[in-house]
Length: 298
Image 1 (tube, rainbow, N blue to C red):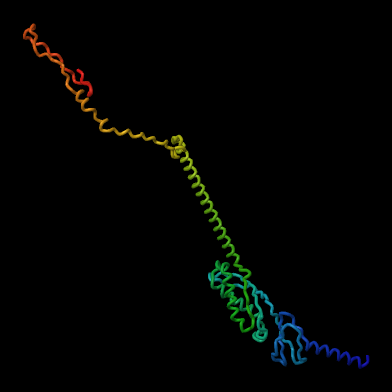
Image 2: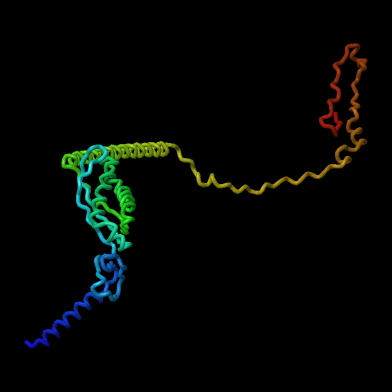
């Protein structure tokens, strides 16, 4: 090959190298940290950027999206000295690419270790029975502890969720027995309550039957429906007052009364007959009293 062709190929390769070193396209929700001669220069956002060839270089690339970090299972000891295996998942987001690059060497590994330490501390404060109920409280406490530590790193811990809590096999067997006993207790209580309600209902039914039978034996009143209604009273006919008598009508004529009340003049012979001698004759009866007030007949 002629020497001129080699020169052209060399120049074309050099141009491509310079373009690759100077032109950079940053995707959306990403950030590139640029260093110039080994020192921090600037942070490139999304878009097209031109760098100084052989002077500027991209050293760190960060994603500004929310990322999920898996926290592996670890053994934690509860307050009542029971060992449980707990694992979880952590959600974080890079807010400051510069501090995330120079504040710590590997923020993912640091957050994972810190989450495990905070989780062991929170599990040790509560008992085994409460670990299943206090998941929300444990998650919030872990997030608060991680948020304080990751603030200088430019990383924001959004939330932490416990995935599984695995007690030992013997503890699981004891918990199953306890749950079975509780269920049997509830079944016995419900059965006894059902029998009690049935007895009460039966007694109430018998009482109602006795009341109905006693009411049926009582004599029924006739026209009970009519007696409840007010009977229409016939109009009372008051007698007309008698005519007032005058004084003349009340007292009779005084003359007639005197004539009527005049004593009878019947003769009662008191002399003796000359023929009969001195022997007295029986006296004749005198006039009888008047039979009425108006008549004076003897």
